[in-house]
Image (spheres, rainbow, N blue to C red):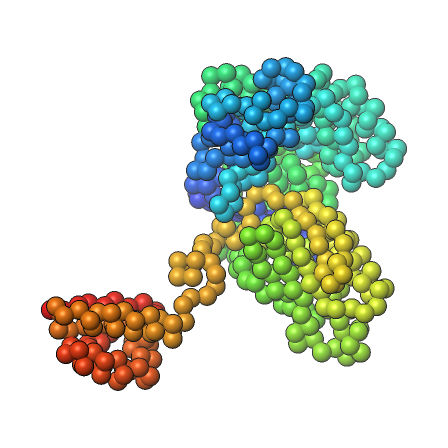
Length: 489
């Protein structure tokens, strides 16, 4: 059974997509944060970098947005000087202080600002409108040639002049009635954006891509979903209204209002909160006894497959193959659940037989094909690693629940006990040379004090006494390796 579970409260909106009793995707929108992917801003050029063929724009966010020259061409042709010069360098197109309307492609992450474009897109359920592009494209997921031809003929007649359209997978089998209504809605939305642009201030939001509920209804809710359950009555009627306006009326029978019998919210009842907590861990246990270790670095996502407790009941090759096959099914789910994107390197357990490698690769491809986010397997490397990419969209799951550790600054390691003690002794030695003091007091935790007294205290105390000073150790209530040295005259 395929389900969508939606939780709405005063502080956040959350949606979980469940396939065969497994959570495969989580969408979160918090009131104080909001999602900016797809939003359109009025920006101002803050800096032009010819060497990087890009510019930085102030769009009202904490960090300036990044605009690459190839994401600017069509804006230049239509809005700046009307000249089609696609090979002009960016310094000839933009100057510091120029005002540019941009759409967010990728949200800010880490030390990087948002990536923006002037290739605007306004998504609907059945199509995507491209206001400054005269192109007609059909989703590659629609394989049937007769259906592709049918859709192409329909849209040739109804496509707005000087605007482009991408026909989405959901358009398969739908009538012209659905498309005309949605085109009218999206064209009007673009006209409203253009009206706002003239009087808008720098950093003003001209268009905000819809929240969690509309994203679910527009991009995910379809005949493949068996039921949609929501725990908020106001949101329930909002969903019904959307279905009446844009979708097939038969989908209404799948929408249910959840009324809990106790204090638990819908995410607790369906054990989605538990699944989220597991997705924040690096290690994923496989049913066969093996495991995945998923680690994120600045440059890429690494996934290591281990046999773990899976000793197998056949030969070694069979055990390795079974573990790798289960990993190939679980990895795509984890990527969707954690919303990881960018470069991904998968280290499967070494396989000697080419047919085993092909079977694992095929299983991985089949499961990645279920992902609504664009992805691509590059190849098996000579070292037996699989290189793949997944488009970055929105924030990764961990960013809603975790922050960088202030002790280790995200490295996962802190200074060792011995290193801290040696550092402390070096400071005591320097302080002992000060002729104006009589006592050196060290304030430290109990565990650091015990380690210091076991190995070094007598030696350091003698060193300090020889310089006619007293060494005092004082415990604090902390449970860490920090210390403070107080000099007393």
